[in-house]
Length: 140
Image (cartoon, rainbow, N blue to C red; front, side):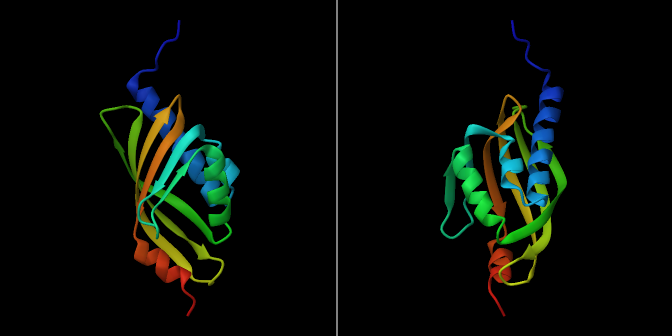
């Protein structure tokens, strides 16, 4: 018989998965980040041009590996909003880093909606300021 964790413990476990994924971002290590994802995880980026929907951990690994060739950044969580469903969190955070192709600094603010299954990220929708990203990607 399996016993489901109390909501407070599920939320803590889920936040720990986000924090571990963010360590992967800070290390520019897509494998470290996606180790926190389910095999069928979905990553949605509605503010990229064009908007992207990346389906599956392997596809996310490929996408993020390429992204980390350009973006080197550290992420800092500024707010965590618990949802009614303990397997959903809304996380606000900021980035501070560099774009390798232009040498420009990159800082942005984000809001992500995360959903979890068994302590792993199964869904991530990322909202950020596309103007900040575009400006950092364009060489002077």
